[in-house]
View 1 (cartoon, rainbow, N blue to C red):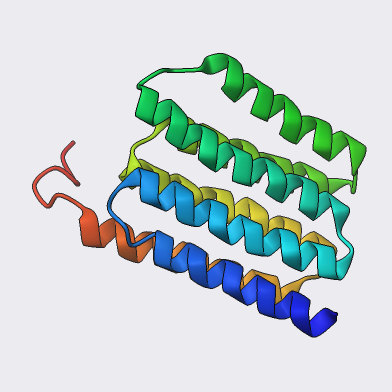
View 2 (tube, helix red, strand yellow; view 1 turned 135 degrees about the horizontal axis):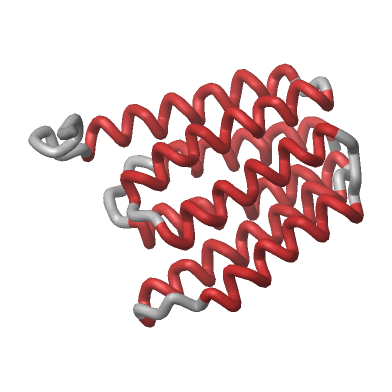
Length: 171
């Protein structure tokens, strides 16, 4: 079961890496939901129900962000429900500092997904990944830290790939 968990984790990271290189935010959100689906399977293999519940929220968040963007509505009430969901999950599965870092990561991600365009989303995900790396350090998942480093790199590479040269460094 452990090997299967590692395979699902790797598939989740691969789908996330690939998703960062799509220009449209809607496709990025769908690949993010796909990667979270693989994470759900991985967490089930490892018996981490905190990870399962967070990943279910991430899948739902990705689908709701796409719906919100397609309908061209703000839907602040739904954003608030997701924030409450992530905070409630952190309280239920409290793990000390690790929970704080994971919750900060999730709150940065949901805010970026809900309000930012694809370029700002890539940069804010780098910041969220730093908090997630702190979470992984707290729980002793050093392999996860190296994988999360690749998430930061894929976001930065895709950011520079899609940037507009004339407006990036304007002051």
